[in-house]
Length: 336
Image 1 (cartoon, rainbow, N blue to C red):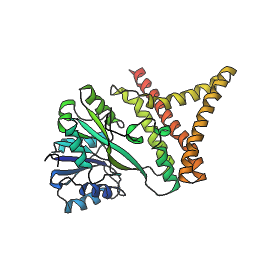
Image 2 (cartoon, rainbow, N blue to C red):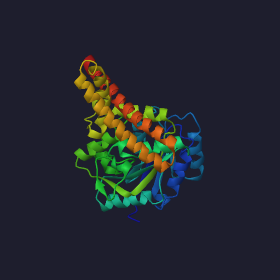
Image 3 (cartoon, rainbow, N blue to C red):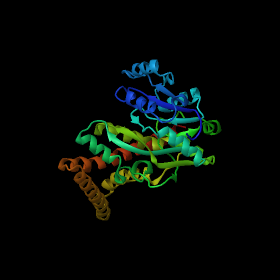
Image 4 (cartoon, helix red, strand yellow):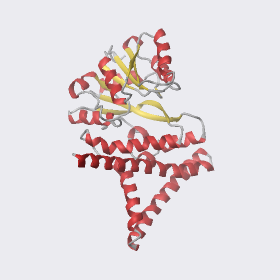
């Protein structure tokens, strides 16, 4: 045991009746002593059985606590959890995720061993439904062509210092030093917090042998909406925060912007038309090759078409979201 530190686990939840029990069970089966773990569920006024399921667990486990989040926003839920947490370390988790038995132990061990302020691991994406569509969505969210160079999604070979980690485990003093989550940020509030942590001299580490299982969205429409929202907030977040734009975040925006402008300008210039089709052709070739490779792994001809259009949908939805975010951002500035 790395030490006798108390750990507070904070889990925001809303309408998670299908996954909350599985998530709780994974924390109740930790190698880390249960008397040194408290599990805080912050429910965003669920309209299903989420609250009832958590309440049933509370009758058997005294270390599970339930709080309400009337605003229904993720950063508000996280802050409610932090304010009510008693732990020396504060660990965040998603309601539709699961962790292995050594997860908490390794987080506490490594945060001390590497003198880090926040540690996290690799996200292993799995389908919510064991269908071809579900498997394809997992591949889209795990492949560099789909998500860029996101280390916690595509994996690493050794511990590395990074700018952000998913569902991090923080020292409590981090929040005393840099403050809580920015509640204006409906998305990307973790990236903003980690940015403030890095600017304050903090250390964030990602470890290959820490992992969690995340259950991906089950339909392409849900994936589109989520990705559109991510693209929107990666731009619009700069209204409330000194938000960094990485190349990985900007490429979909630039791609969609190019498609819109190129399709218009190519009507007045043959030279622009050639460039437009050259770029579009290169993209189509890459999409074709990656989709073909993955479909062979899945041993499904139908998967090729789902992947080919899935990658395109992933990039377009994110890019359109970013353009919408920019329009809203500029519109707000003009009104001032």
